[in-house]
Length: 276
Length: 276
Image 1 (tube, rainbow over the protein chains, first blue to last red):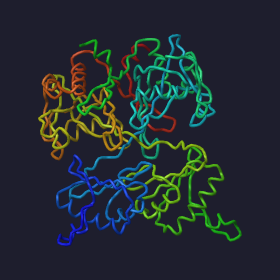
Image 2 (cartoon, chains in turn red, cyan):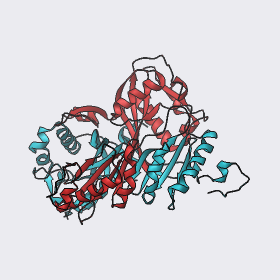
Image 3 (cartoon, each protein chain N blue to C red):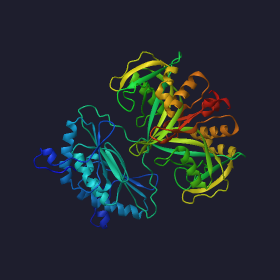
Image 4 (cartoon, rainbow over the protein chains, first blue to last red):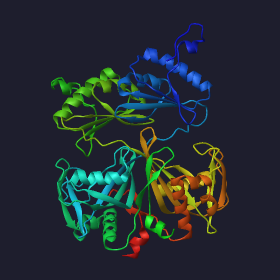
């Protein structure tokens, strides 16, 4: 906070919140230490007035959960929620008199299903202890949720290892599906990944997995549930096709970016390479 | 709220919050009307105690932004944030004495880039008024963010229409990339979509688009920026490959689900069909 000088105009007298500019003509305030709302609100109002005058657009405030005392006062000052994580809430107010072009929140969770298949055409399948398939007897591919900041190709390897103890190498995305309203109002992207096992002795995870085994592909595909439900049937038949005939999915290629981040591009690399 | 009867034990005397069970042994309370925290907290404590005894796991409370007065009291009762949207905050508390297995929040935003190409091998390109490429002179594919609840294949059609006025049909996903830390801690999935134009007269959107035109593919691909940056080069070359030679991406097939939702499965349908 800036220091308070009695000769300065009112707004400067109460100081402004510490802020950094963002790339979209906005300002971001990251609150850290506890502050009483009687201290906070005058600072907020002075900052709002100053930054509005300067033509700033989005005014973001990140409040750690320890500062939940400031949520209600901020809402009364015209801020709305943008997103929240377990330990903080991000609030925002659009300052100009033009339509709000603030970016949307994250809309999707991302999951993987791992088709891990041996040279002898046996596929790694599990039965889960909870969730929608509990007690149905369905043998399914190991599945899981991609962690924050995790690559899809690495999540598939991690989930297989965690659930079954099997080490495996990622080869291809065979298919993916998008569905909506899968968790509150959020959507879901689910990637079916082909992996090649590098170990074969199953050690199942006790907390989530009721049973795990290697099963002939035909037996996996022919399960009544998979034959009866269109989406499951397609996924199972795509897996079978991959193992029996010629089916090309998307491989993962790491790309260097200007900022030094490594990101993966997924595409049909066989068709791409063949035609270079 | 349940009615209050003086002969009942204390917990029932103050009543419980209205709740519905979820599929994971949890309870969800959706608050609607304004309530003072002096009324709310006794109800919350009685509900907590009752549901803990019943072996409930996740205790969810959805608070509309009009009830922001209850955020701080709830945090003091051991609730944490789960996620937020502009008009509500979802808080949660894990009741058992076992590790918290609550589902993660949405982790990804989803975007599209549209490769709209005419039979004469001209591609639809734009220059944007703001964002990272403003003023660089780069002609790029129309891009945009997939709305909440929107299918990727439909978002591509919508964005092309909005930005350029061109009507187009979705054909295939040619490639996609995942990147992290793209918006606060969130990740980003970006799908490169092939579309066939059904109209040809460009009417650009004035608010976001500085210029739009049809450009020979070679000219689009050969722009210095696209040649210099690995990710852009790959995407451009995959687009060129698709137009010049044999490259198969993932088509979108609608699937009926048991719940009546229509969801899309994306896969290499040429390879799949050829081998049936």
